[in-house]
Image (cartoon, rainbow, N blue to C red):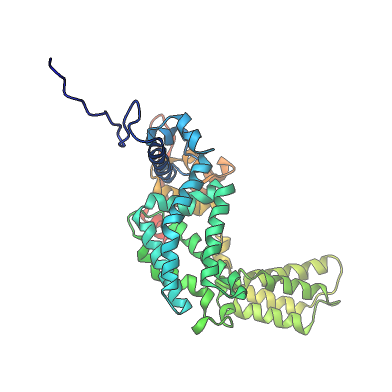
Length: 382
């Protein structure tokens, strides 16, 4: 009797047998979960979190809808789980780099180098961990904040320094969002630039905090200075005191735009209600605004629509970054990709970018106009 040779099990594109599983259920579920997480990272990086759909993730992963919802509650849950997986891989390496260094400044540099090297390993996953998590919101943001808190604790054992360290880490995170738009440029190449930004938290040798207020980018985050100015104004009958004068002088000297701006508003509010206001102090605050920074930017640049290192990217910057990653997108694509509230807002920002020579519009026959970033636009993202 002739026996037919045993045929190997037919396998799908990603290695799991079709039909009855030949793997133990635990192994099959693990591989399915890994495929869905990787597909989530790829689709979110390519389309943006808002535009990514569960259907696209299912097609990319090669799993059924039933399988997806047996593993994850939603698209946001898949992003959260993907971030958790990345943290389990990367955070111990970053912590080890921190512990290997004695001086705080060297620890910051070692942590940053390790972090950027990990992100460069896979830029799609980098997009998921830096941008996708924020857009997913809810539990995903809570997991990101937990990882951030662990880094703050490692870099700043002293409670008094933690707010400044947190501000520096958020500044690096914001800067990374724009750097991720250029897929061809390794993130580790921006290490020195980001290190200087992060070292705002450790200004001065040995981590002394005395010089931190001399750095405008960090000074902009010091809400306590703003509160002190307002409290001093409210506590004086004529809007003048030696303490208030010292606060305004210090804010003008350090370029603390938010504190000076609030002082000017309070002085004007006093006059509106017929209360006395010291015009000399108001003039000093106004003069200081000419040289002050808001979130790391001079007032004139902020008014022009740019976003600073410690400020979330403006809609205009987000439009430009989206087009850099997704050339040939329509205005509708951009609006969905950046999660803009109103399509008309995106239309206005794209028109501004075209007038400024940062983006170029192409109109095809019978279809919506598409947009691309110009060379000047790419330079503006750096």
